[in-house]
Image (cartoon, rainbow, N blue to C red; front, side, top):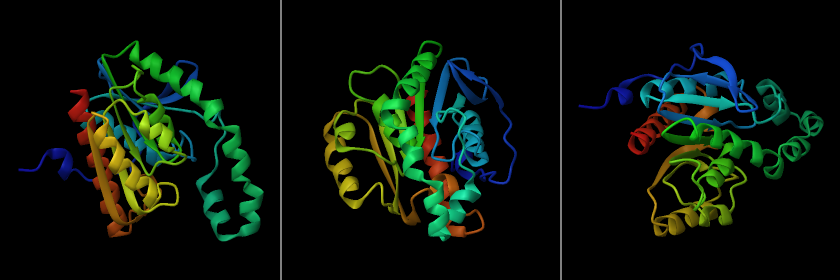
Amino acid sequence: MADECCKSGFKWDGQPIGTEGKLGENNAYITGTNKHLAVMIVHDIFGWTLPNTRLLADHFAKEANCTAYLPDFFAGEVIPEEALEAAAQDPAKMKALDLASFISRHSKAIRGPEIVACAKSLKSSYAKVGAVGYCYGGWACAQLAANGNDLVDCISIAHPSLLTKEEIDKLGKPVQILAPETDPQLTPELKEYCNRVIPGLGIGYQYDYYPGLVHGFAVKGDPKDVKQRDGMERAKNATVGWLNQWLH
């Protein structure tokens, strides 16, 4: 018989049930009551207020029996989802949005230290800590899981952005990668590199491939499209399974 989490539907149109609080110096969405196991989610470009990501945190808290934290790693700056969607259709609006400047304001050098600080805060309070990263959050989770760090016990990254071969080489904790077929960030070359290098690092590894889906599917897929909705549910269930395997 299938696990209950595999049969549960994804509440994409639901309301987040957690609360807003603090993780270290950062504002954070917090959900769940487990005092021994925690999961930190590093958000994508839409930041910590995106309802979809908060709903994912709720699912992880319930189905992986943990306390999930979704901190704000953009210092309060939020790009409205509708603004990016409009920019994708209009070159003038894309230029005005100036994503390059946004990313530079939230570069690895600038945001990396506070992401580490949040992970340290969790590690000092919980017996085990996992990290989940979407898009922008992928590189951050990889750095947290670097060999020699004792910041997390496992990571799951979906369609990671800005991930480098050097970060892959340094992985020292169990890693799960959720990889769509089409992804300008997780390129075919980088996918091949992950699957060639990570199995030789002596760590747990799972590569989950999603044919027909594109970058961003695990957070921002269209729930009205059957293929995209199935991909979102499968990705959520895969992450839950990974967290249960390595945190319990």
